[in-house]
Image (cartoon, rainbow over all chains, first blue to last red):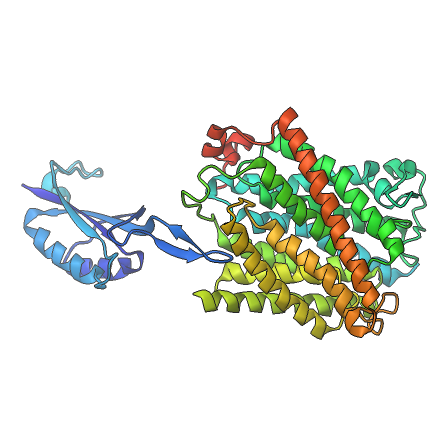
Length: 114
Length: 402
């Protein structure tokens, strides 16, 4: 009854595309958090009154969903395709093992609770 | 007495009062998130402090019976026993309307300085500084230029709505206090992200709106002079905003913050000239002001002084240019009560204007520097390092913005 948590850092503007693509493949439940972060591109410069200033962390979204381990590859495929622009800053996907899942309403456990 | 004039000056008073909280938002948007409320507080606390000071003695020493050209007497303390009708300043409006209108100017000027030392000023030290500054810099400067018997007024200095009295005093003093208080912790090393540029844009354009009262109300009448003053004001603000936007675009991108800053600089610069000039002169004044202030900010950053919101580069440079420009562009054809400037055949006026800028600037810088030094030594002008790290919203006021 192995399950995995998929944690994806994505561009804010990609959320709707990603959600629609995930839903098409049957991934309905997910949690989204506003986060700040940086990757190889580091920060960016924004305009000040005269000249510019640096912003070292960029706003991103963290999307979390827990899936059956057999569905991990399809979820990754959907995520990478829907969240990609091809430019630095597209984000990353992390995959973790999940011990158990409990549905609060019914007390169901494991994959039945997904 | 004239009902129209009185109504216009009273509305102008309200417009100018709106500028002080507007200035708070203009500044707070550029402060970091942990200092939004404290930056707003620097403006709104001045509104309540100086409104009282003005009634108690500020008006008396600014506009009261002259003592040697330097200061008004204490005859009108508490506005007691004065004529509520006749002022000697504006024949067609009640004395109280003039007192109110001038109060709004006395309020916003010390609030302007606050941009120099946001995010590190100790609130109690700030209140003390502002009260002393109003008493020993603003009130005398207002007397010199606008008070009956004031020595610059007697020489024929032209400052329609406060290029010297408001913008030079505030801008130059900002530089002096910034030098005393020192840089913010981490200035130039760690990023300082503005909390909300939308607040700044909102504040800037509320200031623009209030400026119609600031300059237009300075006509002290609701006639052709108020109208031509407002046209000059709007023209200069627009020309400067446009110029700043283009400069920032040429450098990289058309900045909203840049446009808003440019507008304020243009409005500040046209303030002393607005009642004496044609709209075309106003556009020239605005364009030049934007260029001067833009590069003044670059220069200020290069010399690594943390005059945080560039009160000097915007108001100081704008005010100095405006006072000089008044000596260039003023036309008796626009305002017969004024004088012609250099471009209209009267080079002498330019000399008077230069003397006005130099004397008001020097006086403001010296007194502000001394006041800041004394308060810093006796009382403390700056919060502790830990309070600065936490942010002034929590450490000074025990509140958070959002």
